[in-house]
Length: 392
Ligand code: FAS
Ligand code: PHB
Image 1 (cartoon, rainbow, N blue to C red):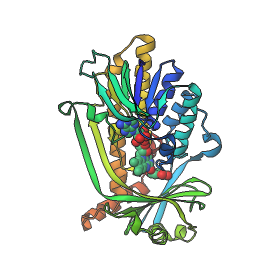
Image 2 (image 1 turned 45 degrees about the horizontal axis):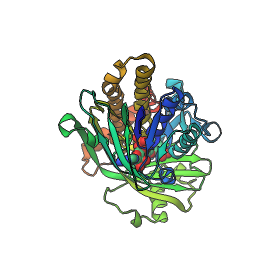
Image 3 (image 1 turned 90 degrees about the vertical axis):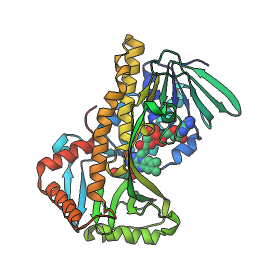
Image 4 (image 1 turned 180 degrees about the vertical axis):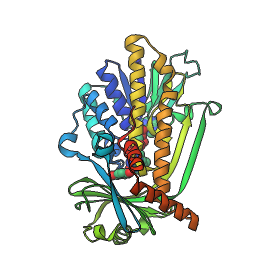
């Protein structure tokens, strides 16, 4: 087979890139290791920055966001049983949109199917060939689908296959450097068909650990509590979860917490990770294939979107204007914003979580950070600008 772009990974990065390229008449083939239902079954991000919302519009994706999304103009932060609100719109003129990653991915799959673009599901043994630093040769991707071996020659490969994919590993080890910080805790998350405890998100720093109150809609709540990284989700009954959550949020919120059975419950590890560079010849990495953030700043999906924005514009300039300068500088351009998202996610995680090894001084520093945030307009503006999304 021949095509212009092979996209490895049918998650939000891969699908958004495929849709944007389609709108510009650029052909892409998507390879996804799992089934569509499996991909849609993963409960992940919940908050969209203005950038990904604009990209979905540019990709002509008919999202249900207008009817099922919720604009949030601020968030609540609590510590030591007190809480304060940070107003996004006051500081940035932008809200964020609460609309689950699952819904974004569903909208993208629906759009993909309408284009008739080729998507292979359940692929196995994906291998990348013919990539070199100069990008002289046209790369090839081999894989098996339905037991049949396939071989695609293309102009470019977009590695959108997440942290455990093949793309990053296909860059020779001596040509890539990785940066990593593994946090000494994870997030236990549940989904419950209960009304959210508050109409905006609550980020709570409590003596017993971090908690986050989020939602998907008026009758579907998403909650998280910090837990030891080696905890087993089987040890967390719903009752234990609800009592732990209630103990970590301010009493006035805890008093109106509506509990119910969990319909999804899982523990996600927290890490910060970046691979440099994000390209090798004609292979380009997007999203979790290149970087991971702790979800505290709601930057994972949103930073994948900014990578896609840069790669889409670079491919568009190449194919339509014969200008390959953006392709040559993709990694540097994307990494400049990636590192700012890494910083914000690390800062939110460091400020809101209780680390096992914190001493009395560390705790006072954390409280001073939160006191400064509560009392200083510039500090709140800085958080708001990062949270709604730095410009592309
Ligand atoms: P993804 O991992 O979503 O998609 C990669 C796709 O590639 C997958 O469908 C995978 O099956 C496929 N694939 C892998 N290897 C392949 C191969 N060899 N061949 C073909 N296909 C292959 N972000 C937030 O902002 N907020 C959150 O609350 C949040 N929670 C998260 C919880 C968990 C457990 C995880 C893992 C991530 C979470 N994230 C969160 C981050 C998440 O939203 C990612 O940033 C987002 O999914 C990135 O999208 P992709 O880059 O498309 O990667
Ligand atoms: C979510 O709703 O899943 C969510 C919201 C904000 C975060 C992380 C997760 O920072």
